[in-house]
Image (cartoon, rainbow, N blue to C red; front, side, top):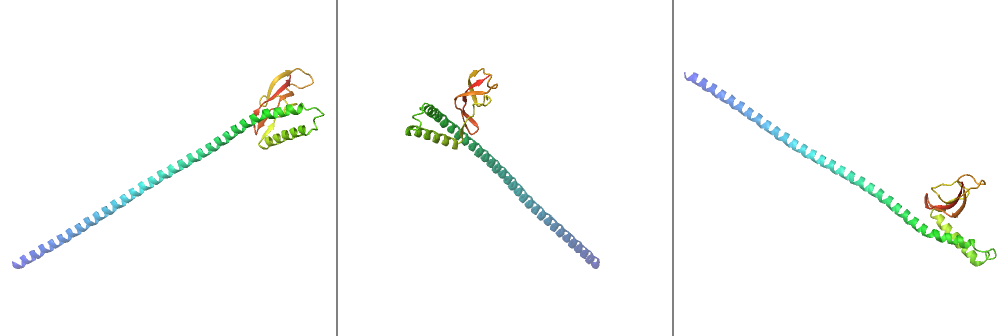
Length: 195
C-alpha cells in the first residue's frame, strides 16, 4: 500500500508540477501580452503625437502661405497706388505749367518782325524751347489737331463752320493746344471743326 501511496503521491506531485508549469506558462503569456499591449499603446501614442505634429505643421504652413500671398497682394496694390499718386501729381503740375506755355506762345506771336532778332526775343524763344523739351522728356506731348479728324477723346469743339473746302469733321483751326501725359489727356485741344 505504501507503494501505491507513493505512486499516487508522485503522480500528484507530477500533476502539481505540470499544473505549476502550465500556470507559469500562462503567467508568462499574460505578461508577454501585457508587454505587447504596452508597446502598442506607446506606438499609438507616438503615432498620435506625430499626427498632431504633422497636422500642426500643415496648419502653420498654410498660414504662412496665406500671409505671404496677402503680403504680395499688399505690395502690388501699394505699388499701383504709388504709381497712380505719382501720375496724379505729375498731371497736376503739368496742368499748372500749361498756362505759362500758352502765355509764352502768345507773347512770341505778338513780337513784330523788327524785334524778332533782338536778344530779348531770342531769350524768350530759348526759354520756350527749353520748357517744351523738358516736358517732352517727362512724357508730355502736344496733341496733333489741325487737319486731323475730330476725336472727342482728344478735342473739344468750340466752333463749327460750314465750308466745302474741308472734309466732314475735320479740325480746321486750333484755338488752344491740348496736351497728353503718356497715354492720358491732360488738356483737350480747343478746336474749330468743319461740318
